[in-house]
Amino acid sequence: MAISRPLDVQINLNVRGMLPSATVAINERCNALREEGREVFKLGLGQSPFPVPESVVQALRDNAHQKDYLPVKGLRALRQEVAAYHRRTAGVEADAEDVLIGPGSKELMFLLQLVYYGDILIPTPAWVSYAPQADVVGRRVRFMHTKVDDDWALLPEALDALCGEDFGRPRILVLNDPSNPTGLSIPRDRLGELAAVARRHRVVVLSDEIYGELAHDGGHDSISRHYPEGTIISGGLSKWCGAGGWRLGTFLFPRAMRWLLDAMAAVASETYTSTSAPIQYAAVTAFRGGPAIDRYLVDCRRILAGLGRWCAARLRRAGARQPDPTGAFYLFPDLSPQRARLAARGIDGSRELCERLLDETGVAILPGGSFGREDAELCCRLAYVDFDGGAALEAVAALPEDGLVDEAFLRAHCRPVLQAMDRFGDWLSG
Figure 1: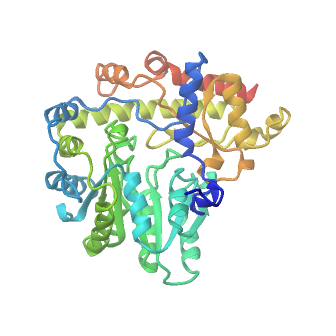
Figure 2 (figure 1 turned 90 degrees about the vertical axis):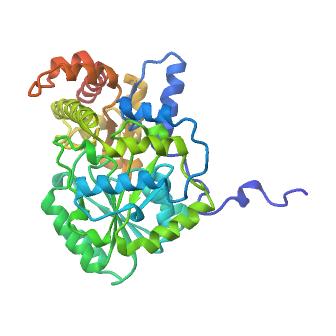
Figure 3 (figure 1 turned 90 degrees about the horizontal axis):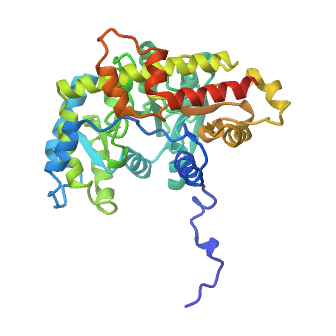
């Protein structure tokens, strides 16, 4: 039977006109440019540069034969290890029944928004997929814009003011700590203040802690310590374990929210069924941790901390407003101090800035508009990950424990990132 209406009319109104994820799109574009022979520095996609720890890789080899469907909520042994991990790191009471495993935390976030009715509160700048997921589901998004003067952190009074509207309305506050895209962590006292506001307004907090193990000082604090009864902790293997392509995410729920876990599991049973069995068996080893993985994390943090500070300083020398990062592997510079210089070159927005930067220097970054900011603000995000993480880990392991990851180390082992930052800085101030 012929379709009687144009094909585009058949598309759900919530997704009509939706573009691919900005981070995925920039990665695919960079790959295409490299295939054409262009020199490209990939600072767009936030993918860990480090290899998966060998013990975890070996666990995957040992379990490649696992072929059966696993429980929808996840392998029980893995759920036990995830609960134990959060007891160690976040100090929360948890057991296997509080954990849901999914094919990436991104999928679990989508299911949460689908199942839990309410507004989605998003501080900006924010990761690119939070708001589009809400749009797909049909949830109302309320943005709360932060400022570089506050290190891009959400102020408790801003949350209180928003929640004072329509008191009692169901809401989910999404906090990403450490932050993608800013590379900054929420101070402990600020977490306590935000928790008090969330508790007062009965807001559910989705604490996206996928970068928690990559807090540069190793001292990540979770808002769940301050608001355990209302916080869902999101995590996974992609960032701290270097296993983005393995697609395994975890949610830890407060015990009072097991009804929500069960509802999400019911939807999961009708969609993805269960997460890959070999990956789940291997993830048991990752979350169990141990001396080798602890050493791996310390070395990853040393490299990222040194590299992040160097990149931030380079941007400041070029005239950007950029605090030193405290976690993850991102920077979110404010380039407005260079507005007049850029305007003289025909650049008046962050999207045009990123296009020109890529075309003229080969440095690929993303505009602030992809992260919920106004194009005219002249903000952008870069991920300082375009280097051989395996070689860098071998090199840092040979340093004394108190040895500095200085510029000489970075020039030797993270050279593409430093080349990209030098090109970016020279282009910006030139």
